[in-house]
Length: 333
Image (cartoon, helix red, strand yellow):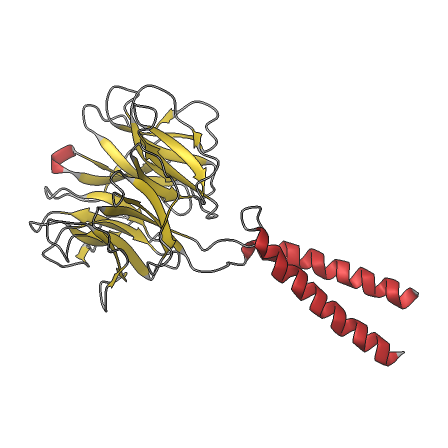
């Protein structure tokens, strides 16, 4: 009897250890959320990073646009015109549980999730001018204004990986990228100083680089620069087509972006390239409508309510180890 009790206690201990470990284990491929007009209006789609499994998750007659993943990959924030004025919403990654988090009026757009998942930065016209604001991701509390440079227009916020900074673009001097403390304090740091419309900043996962869109060479290209001071600005897409809206893979090795390179000025699709611009470029989408504003999220996380099937491998592992121990005990007896 004592040996059986010891075995049971050991199995319970192993199960607890698995529960603690599983939330950090990824199940399946990393995913890209994006906007698509293939069905006649803009919807939010999700696919594996290689373009497979494309699924409409917003499925609403209004325009849904500009998705961004939560840090744990369980939710997506996005802009929608379903309320008639344009607001920021949050939904589960399968499209359920849609919640509006911004107030009416006015219009809001281009949401970005903080690295700790607690806040969302976005463009708002609350002040009567386009500025970056921040609000709790669950919609509670009041909005906090981050940028104040009227009458310029600040948008496309992007959080640094440590959450201390927000990069954004402004129409000052033809369009440039700035960085400011994420709580709105301190002075802004200007990273670009070029009249070529520098917009849509995206931090690399390690925080050392910022990818962005620029028209300085006559057409939209994807550039990368050092995040600390804007030095080392390099064109990595280098194509006569229009390339825009970069988003990094979680490991920093690749960048997804929007381009019309296979149907110049006729249709935009989503592509994936190496983060240094070298090698082959993968085309992810092939729809007749616009596909764009990609956001590269993490792989689904095991052992969450969203992925109940993840319990199966946990049970299987515990069962297998239990059987091995039981056989060993039987032989010893």
